[in-house]
Image 1 (cartoon, rainbow, N blue to C red):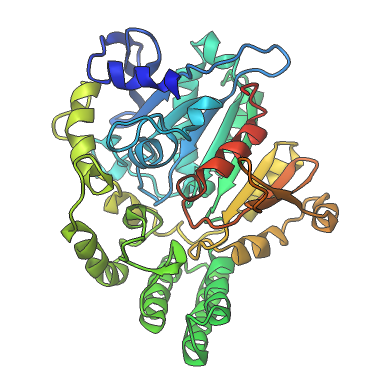
Image 2 (tube, helix red, strand yellow; image 1 turned 45 degrees about the vertical axis):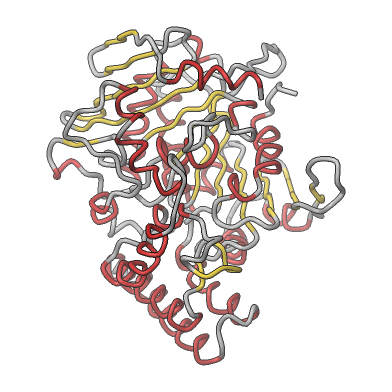
Amino acid sequence: MKNLSHFITIFLFLVPFFLGTENVTALKSHDGSEEWGYVQVRPKAHMFWWLYRSPYRVEDSSKPWPIILWLQGGPGASGVGIGNFEEVGPLDTSLQPRNSTWLTKADLLFVDNPVGTGYSFVEDDKLFVKTDEEAATDLTTLLIALFNKDEKLQKSPLYIVAESYGGKFAVTLGLSALKAIEDKKLKLTLGGVALGDSWISAEDYVFSWGPLLKDLSRLDDNGLEQSNSIAQRIKQQLEDGKFADATSSWSELESVILANSNNVDFYNLLLDEGSDSSSTLSAMELGLFKEISMKSYSKYLTTMRSRSFSPGGDDDIDTLLNGVIKKKLKIIPENVTWGGQSNKVFSYLEGDFMKPRIDEVDQLLAKGVNVTVYNGQVDLICATKGTEAWLKKLKWEGLKNFLGKDRTALYCGSTKTTKGFVKSYKNLHFYWILGAGHFVPTDQPCLALKMIASITQSPAT
């Protein structure tokens, strides 16, 4: 990964150039390989973005070089921090090159979404978004600000790639961006939407947890009965439109699952939460900040932080983002403290948290947008069992043919060990990623890189 070494060389020695427009404040590195800044998406609501231009860029007229917009989950988890330094960006949390960075296949755009997440901030709490659609509107405003005045960006098809709750943002953004493109307000080509372990249908996920854990001996009949009982309550609350109540019941169900399974890790069901192998990403992703859930996770967080970590390691991401990275970026306000997960963002979206977004997936498919769904085999929070359940609820005309197709086995490297499967029909694609939990790029980096190259039709070799 020789081409990535320049990111380390220039990382702390960037010569920033100011770029200013009416609602955009930005800096870029001297060599143009990085740009970052704020877009004021609404008065007093500021969204932070960070763009990496790939040193592996290949100019191919038949396959234009793609750009990936990475959307983190939570809601309220930071893509600029987690997705960038923990998963797919050029450098890891020790500021060393990541051999599996997706920058080898595309340019990367990280955004702290919604406002109030990570480095993004609001000047008034009333400006926090309360719905996925409001978040999509802000993101569309950001895309308009970045793309409309940059012809180089306009030449690259945009692929919206999401993880966890980010999948709900991705499908609502996809539709919002398409409308803006049709209305000639946004100058870009939407290449596709990819939903990684995405919280598209809460109902299908909560109903998957009990049976899946029972089959794997992690719950007994009593635990299964308790789990299914709360899942049924959630189903009724969703049907009655009591979405905030459903969020509270979801939190209660997590606690029941933890108690009956002796603390299974929701992000890798083969592990215990807080175990030595458990990912530190877990504490920063989907939900987990309701009062009930926080009690059950306090032991986990204490355990993780009590261990000895090397400087700049996973546990040090808060120090990294509030220290050397904040200093490098230069434009982060002094009163803005980076955090992996914003409690306020989650709280304001509490009423939308459990709402399904299956209809939005249907609309994207009907409009001909390439939609890719990928899932880690041992994820629990967004279990493959639940993903397959909501997928079968699609009204898309090609669903029957898709379900009837055979899967193709996937391999990585020189070995013939099965790493996953893929199934495609027209513009719907599904990847089963073996051995991966909730964080596919971290757990199966080789196959994730191969998959993203296929999704984006990257001309890179």
